[in-house]
Image 1: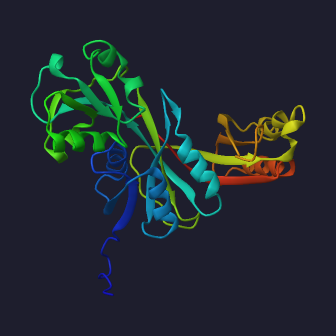
Image 2: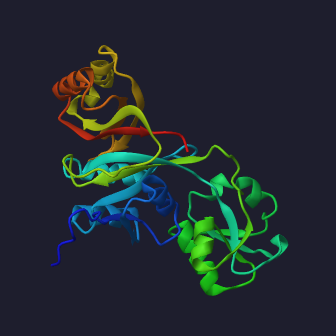
Length: 297
């Protein structure tokens, strides 16, 4: 194996939800800018995370939260399963803009079918329930796959809701840009690495403040006040909780794990003391990562 000359930038492989032209690829490119990376398209979010766990890529970029639709539960579940093996090492906020895309110019009243990712219709309701009310909406694995399918089938009346990037990649026609209902729609993507000692990407658009992500669970959930006591470990140390939500542990009805985001990083003693206190309340506590916050897109 040849060794690159000293001073040559290391080309990092980055897994993301493909194919080319997805919002995940847009987030990847927005995050690293001109940094030397090799985007590696994967079929699903699961595949992107597994590629990282198997050592096939250096980092993975996966969506974790949308400002309108909430958390991406598959990502949360994968992070819990890989706790201790993978670390969140950064985040990127991406402004979500949807475009109406066809294989060739077509009038809106000729459209009978719209392909897109299942999360998108709720973000473009005005268009779908208004000018395209007579069209059926069918799911695709990603917005880019929807655009690629539309180009491959090249059928008049079949369109996609996707990205301008996908339209450029697959040679499609953008009928209308910015068809989303709200212009404040953002998705938060997290950058994953193999462990806390792995190299971190030099991301753009970061604030100075740090945040830390945790997952925890315990046998005390059946007792009144257990969750309050867990969170009090941080509240009485003046550590700000910015997000919390539960997910089933898949061990029967009523068994949950809790994901939390807290202000602060590895240098904050109050956060460290709070996490130590949380260990006393729970069966399992995992720090999923500490990283600088991304500025709004």
